[in-house]
Length: 223
Image 1 (cartoon, rainbow, N blue to C red):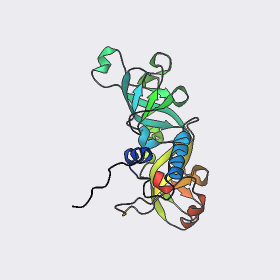
Image 2 (image 1 turned 30 degrees about the vertical axis):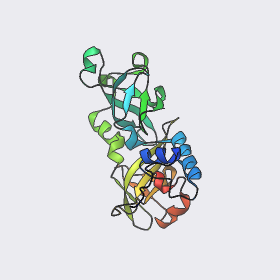
Image 3 (image 1 turned 90 degrees about the vertical axis):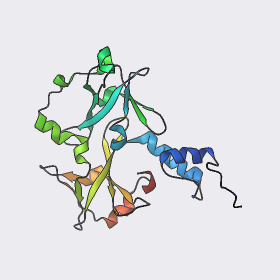
Image 4 (image 1 turned 45 degrees about the vertical axis):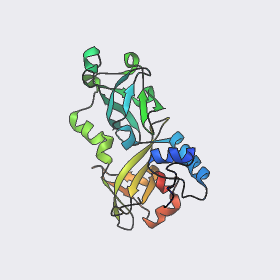
């Protein structure tokens, strides 16, 4: 009878399994784990933030619904959140909070928990002094799936955004260079300082898609 392989053999392997990728096939799993840890300390993924839990540090309050970028799209300015029933019955309200007023903590697995003092930092929807049309243009979710046009004519969709977890600055636009791949993603991070944004929100970079290979700050498997 064929011997079964252990499901998880190391602590690093356990963390990797939760993360959705495995370090066990790497010649240097400790190096891969360190790269992942470094990335987690530096940046947050917009797709990871949207839908994450909101808490006052003790009690869950709701979930993040979207992020509002500054008019130049270079920083996250506000975090929008929704307080569900029955929490809303206990005095909780939908609203928003400034990025600078929150702390990001590790949630379950690889989830992120957004923490802030609701009495001091949370504001009501009517306090958001942005028109509906302007808000729609500034939502981080709107950037996802937009195309970035490269200097060689290639156009690739934005898969995710990376933001500095301390300042809220948009640091990278993550793209999927092979969207047809089934078992392995081929993602690359475009440095935000290389991206120009047109009046209509069009995204463009002067470099070629091939030149992007020499500008990677993170392992593509971590993106």
